[in-house]
Length: 277
Image 1 (tube, rainbow, N blue to C red):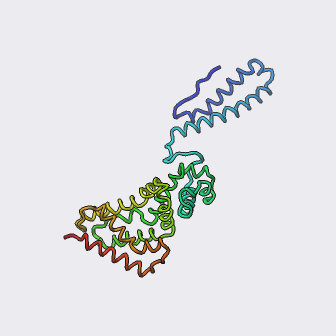
Image 2: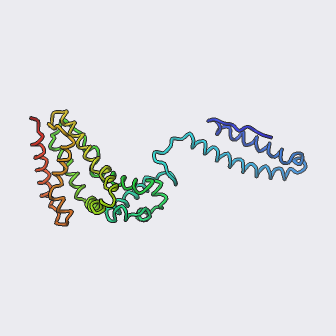
Image 3: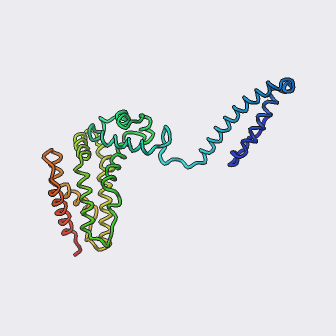
């Protein structure tokens, strides 16, 4: 006997009735007239069939629910994404990439450092290039959040630029950023693609954010800048200055007072160049 399965969104509500119908039909079809002679056998068979069919129905219901569900933003093998594991992987990558470089950092090493499986790393990021890019994004967003580039036309431009300057300088002078810079310079000839990935994931995004901020300041008549992208590049180059070069060469770190004096002087020079005329 062939029974039509219930379909559509109401299949879950109809599953109990459908299960009983299928079980009764299967027992009658399998045992025929023997049911009356051996009620014990029929009862046992009915119990076994009930378990099998109920289990299969549950699997079917689960699958159909999954088809109606909203897909995850990032697809990949393994279990559903776990934010704590993702954060642990990123923290491990932020430690390992500056120390060992891109080529010297394996996904096995990242997994071991994060305390997760290699499959979990691939499940979250897909590959080493994607993990590297996300690590740069995470590092930049941690010290230079997007909100830092919001424009308040009623606040002094100097204060806003000083906020950006302090955050950018702290990022550039961090051990992680310095280590990454040294690694990229050393491997740029062998791995030009890596250098491009880093540039697009970090410096280019930050520079674009500052350029957008400067455009809004120009629109508010707070600044007079013909080329905001060039002005953003000039601002960051001035901020790095001698102190960044000395740190790269291992020639000493500026004191907090020296750092603040340098940042304020840089902002003041920038404003003198681009103040409204």
